[in-house]
Length: 40
Image (cartoon, rainbow, N blue to C red; front, side):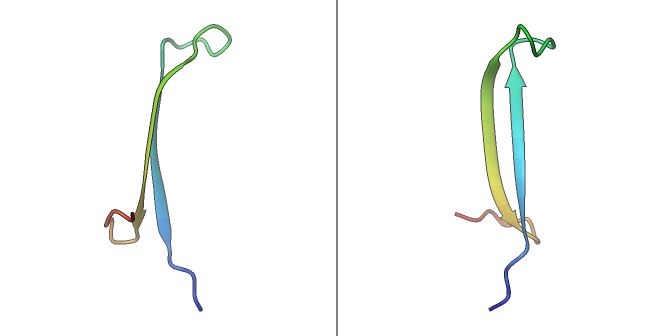
């Protein structure tokens, strides 16, 4: 069986621009097929 091509889109937001001091505030992700239809 062939594997379907999928894409994983993500958005990662932090409280600032300095990674040593500023932590994550939000993360979101979604998987789509190659025609950009949402999977799941």
